[in-house]
Image (tube, rainbow over all chains, first blue to last red; front, side):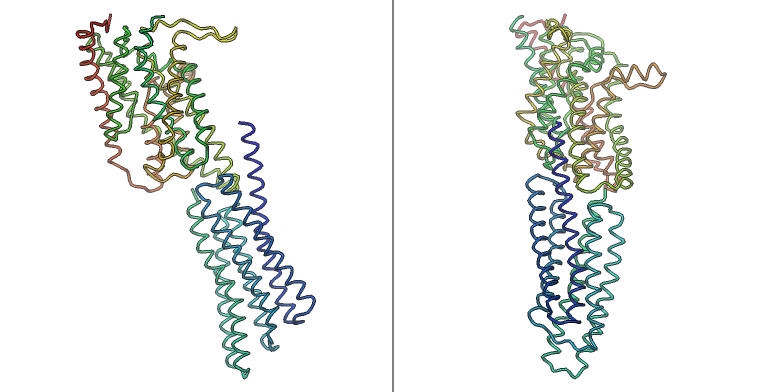
Length: 219
Length: 349
């Protein structure tokens, strides 16, 4: 019995640490993404931007490894039998958001879009909103494991910020298509705007799922 | 010791085996079904604590059954236990919640009627009243425990992973307590009828422990129950628990602790002495149905969570209160007649 309790506690601690680290990765990825957009708008594909882009790739790799470790522990050690499917879904969702940060940064890296100065403010704002939305999604998800009562608070923030991001992306799209830019540039910018705004949309979709998991978890 | 003793005891052992097979699932069913606890761990803990409960604290409920009817011949005890076992088999077939207690009470009354011994109506009333009270009390305890657990979870901010760890340990501890209470409360059903006619002697285990003849009998019964747990409870354990409402491991813990507390309240002589010595109302020491206790607990939680009352299931429990003892009494009476007149055996003195 004593051995059983010890091994159970050590398994619990390892899993808890992995889940915590995984959430840290999402928050790091969202903050680094905001910085990447800022640097790109100021310096283009500079060495500094390349460094930040590599940082996001590294975070994405580490998050993948953590996700696999969490999945293995959950199934291998038979932990959380009744909520395992929900926890897996949640970690996969968070991982998808981290992937989206990586994809968007990589698009900037490869395509090097030319963004006229007049749109910098709006794009910076859109990047900030998407990053903030994902960060709050991460906080809501962390609360799911730590303190259920806070999930709703962070969810509400995600809904609000996603709405702001929607307004911002629409304004930006209208501005772009009202401009005299060549159609090819307009379409490229549209693709970038949608890619960034999609991060906030995805975070909002995942919050809906998280709220259902929360209802299932509350006793 | 006469070999015939073991033959007569076989019906009690069979009853013990079936109790282990069915009632261990009430204790560890959801824990094993949801894979929170391995079957092997559950079976070892159940067997160990059922046997300890039976040997150490089984005499209280047994004395109440003895007061109802002291079956004083081995052949009579054999038939009372066999009638109870066969009735249980039949009630299982009818999908009624099984109660060994109700079956054995029927068996004893059947023997009383056949032997022309009086049945103490006051004791019978106390036993039947307890049957009705048992699921209700389990439901009330479950509701109180549910509120307590909810308060702790909401105010102590226990993380999900830690909660899982604590629930797992809690289920093992609750299972051990449930098994102890089951052994203490239900051993009377299995071996109670043999107490008066048993030829067993006291046994010294080293210089530390001496088992009285009744305790030796209960130890044998405990082993029979354990065999039932190991050989036949696995199937039930993996399917039980979700029959009434879908249970989370935490709710399963609430249900098991409620059931164990009810069984303990109706089995603990120490608690009874404590309550009586402080001029408090005490619980009668009566064997009760662990299946009906757990149904009461689960229904208590279900009602609290807004699930509708399963009247069909309650009806089946109520039918069991009447049908099981009546059927066992009839079967015992008829069988005793054959045992006495066809096989020429002494079924009472």
